[in-house]
Image (tube, rainbow, N blue to C red):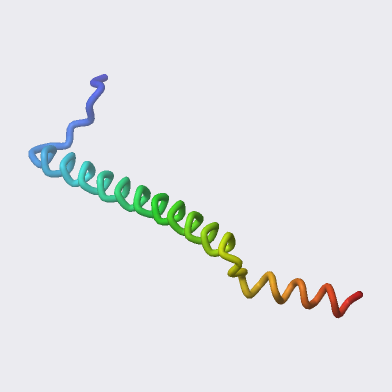
Length: 67
């Protein structure tokens, strides 16, 4: 049994297509991870400056009204 599957006369095209698709997918994942980290840093900067999230104000208000 051979280690490589016979892809026929179009093997080069198939392998290049899979390689390019994997490369694009890796780039998209990298972009998402970088954007996530950038958003976390920006959020930390805003909170350090005293700007809070609207959702935290709603939670704080609901705790006050429940008490």
